[in-house]
Length: 237
Image 1 (spheres, rainbow, N blue to C red):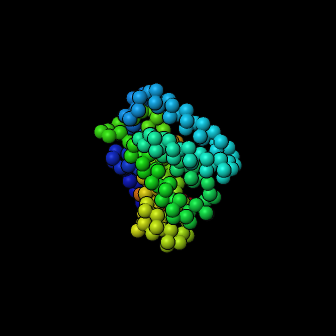
Image 2 (cartoon, helix red, strand yellow; image 1 turned 180 degrees about the vertical axis):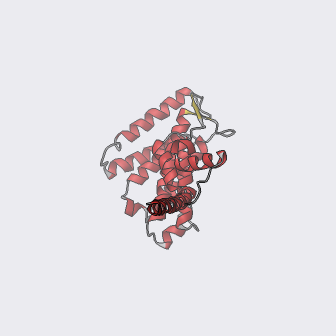
Image 3 (spheres, rainbow, N blue to C red; image 1 turned 90 degrees about the vertical axis):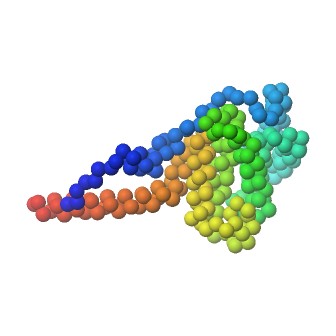
């Protein structure tokens, strides 16, 4: 029977990071109450109130196309007036996403490009300029949502048989294989988890290509070890 292998401390840490969501994506980002970089407290309250009213009609199980269109228009006006308000970009992306079913959405180049552009802008505005160690609660919420939303779209693209016109026409997908799209999705799930989305934290591990590779290697090694144990037991008898 093969002898057992003792893992080094470093190897144990790596394997733990690959297969334990809590270990691999421990929240090293500290979320604190911080001033908004772009707007004062009074303006920020006004923006949140307008945004909350705009979203009220679509926060249902089956929002109507009219309500979704109205929400997008209100958020677009808000962005025109306050172009550095990250949350509005993120929520406009969400509204555009729910305006179509998945099959329809994943075949519409223009809509996907608009969604990805909004998510990128939300991430750019909410990401701290100097250090990711500390972010405000508001920015963390935007980053968690935007990265997770982006990850879901990339993951869907990696799993679906999309036309070449879509894969080449969507900027965030162009020139990438299915494996690369899934890897990019995993990285965005990891970022979403880092900023507080628990589901994204779990999905980051499940879609991590290195974890999947190591998982296959370890499963095969365990199978062989188990077979050896059975053979040894049989001989012993």
